[in-house]
Length: 133
Image (cartoon, one colour):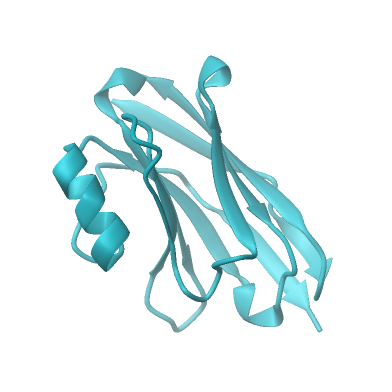
């Protein structure tokens, strides 16, 4: 099992920044792909960004966050970060970290088509981000 714990959420005004953290523990060797999802009340879950930690530097960003959000990792601490800049009220949501094991071919699929076609095995409890105008 892999346990994921998110932190760093909060309230910020539009234009501000937040950095979310996702600390992984347990059998972290069972996952080589990390992603951030978000879900606003009454909305479907949206895949925000992705990183294939198995190598090749593969990443994916949803169009809605491209150029504003950055996913990164700290291997020494088994932590993945989501740096969110130029936040907008429409970024308000519960943010979830997720992990799974996938092949490089599957990771290329995510880069090409997004996160809708991949199931993630491990999920955190979520952290709330609220952006006020």
